[in-house]
Length: 512
Image (cartoon, rainbow, N blue to C red; front, side, top):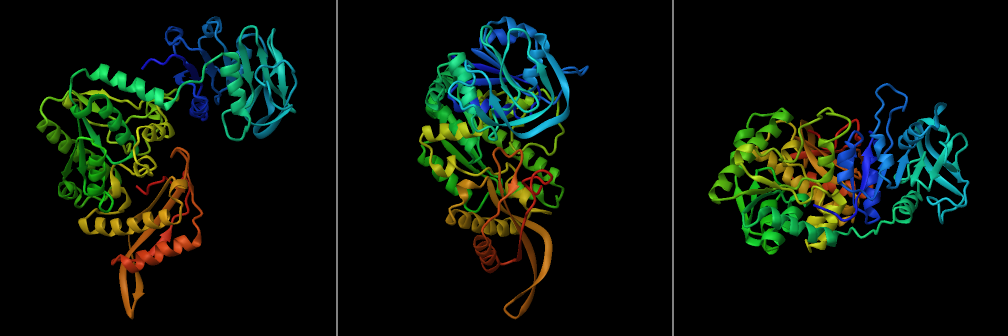
């Protein structure tokens, strides 16, 4: 999709690169991330209004240091270098970069030292910022003014006549509270961008692009009940109406009553949806399987079989909707090369080529919070838009050991109690995910005057921005108490409840 004004962020491997993109978009300015080695031709063809160079872990002097094409300096558009990006600008233009005797990492303060600075216009003389670097610039290149300093380094420099600006600190992280103002000064003050990229505008251009791509063809979408697939389907439905058919497959490991509730909801939204009750087929494939990766693969395989069979019944379909998001796109073109696969991805993205369907991916430019904003703009109910993430393999990865109909029923009941109590306590929106896990452990208990020998269940609640890292939630004791006593008294077969207090890393959010 063509946007009128774009900022390009060249990624040098910083863990914060996606944050830069999110901050820019929060200013209502569209941006995209490209690997640092993107060819000059590609950069030029996108006609960016400005370029931001990200931070990164390397030293500019290292033999294999990532360098972008220095031709970007000749494009005549404003450039902002952050951290490593600042060092690279200095290195390209004849400044001096030295490795410091001590790494600067963490909170620091910079004093702004130039009245005429365009980056610091309207900001106080001292700023709290976040540093993360080993090397630093000790002498700015010719033509640059030093506009901020820390105790031990140059904090910022600019050559306004050439539109070159650089910061040694990270304006994109929350630990630099006025960082967004610095980015605003650069993008709106210096680069003159309009700040008119809104979700309303996105929806209009997305609908036009879908109509152009699909023509008078027909489209199929696999719904999961989650945010991404629902928003993608709703957008496509706005574009092509009844030529979209949604398939919602019951894989036997959904939450309690979820199949019916989701179907009713989609029907209320006037989405053309078919429910396919295949729970027994999935469960028979899972019989005897205890290895987590094999469970995932079995569910993925059966999903594809069911989906293909149902899609074939629809007749002539040319397109498949997928709820791919921008972080998935970035990862597939990432700088860092193939990172280790920790576990196969939850999304059932792997529909085979044998379907011969062209992909429609209306959300591939958006971050998760933007997808939620689009959903609200489209009038989707909060029960969908604000929904916590739920894994593609469903409760199967929350039942440790074999997945059987009985064990699914046990976990569904326990999970429903967790959901009810988290909502009743007003905590649902503040938590990334809260759920129950059925353990393959039995323990002795006493109920009435009888000894029991029954299952244990673990409760997991985590807070996270993006699912990449997560910390366990300090749930109030009274909430834990209610969850525990309700599960033990209402769910026959569970006599012990424990609370998981591990963070990610080293633990993952899901148990499998």
